[in-house]
Length: 280
Image (cartoon, rainbow, N blue to C red; front, side):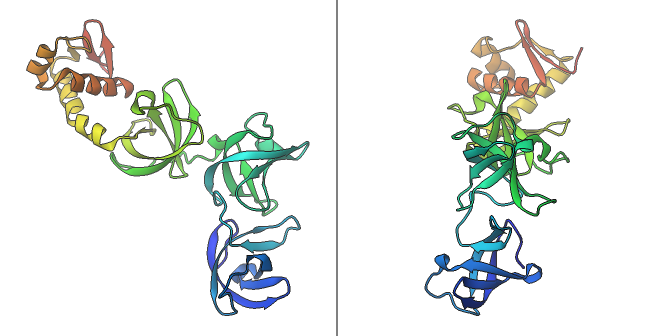
């Protein structure tokens, strides 16, 4: 059955001068205009299409693929702005996508690129965009595990790093020093879950192998801190020989591990050593 804002494989019922009429199930017959005709399109065969409403509010099908579907986030370019109505975004189809003025994240002008949430407006039954992405991120507790592979979209740059939308659903954070090069808003990339924090937020990493390598060392450091009443006289400027004697690792590995624990707000790095944040 056809769904507005999604791709579906539909059966061609018949053809006339306008094009092909497809079986949309509960949505009724849906026109696939003749300009999308390809060899082999015949009544009784199937075709992979995207369904939306045209400027006359008719359900229409297209074989074109939009940059994103309904219930997905995307980074789109502003094509034009119509006063009192909103902005129109290029999402890969002939008909541009409306970003209503009430959904502006801030002032937008033609040529701008913005992260938006694409959804079906309940009042008009039309596909529209929202630039107020925080309203559409899923705030329920995420069911991820450390090391899970995820798809990311950078949504904002913060003092700590990069806010990223995870699998078009939840929000997480990539720390600044996790990336060899600066990341940009709208950039799509693969990542991994680094840690599920007690407050329900998700820490992310771009380098699964490196993070998994230092994970045992971070646990070893935390255990040593617990046994030493929360303090150790070692830090990022300690003698490599002292670090080797205590943990059996290089100074570089130790610095990576305590740096990770510091970013996770589990320890403080002081001039006299490191200490657990939870220990007063």
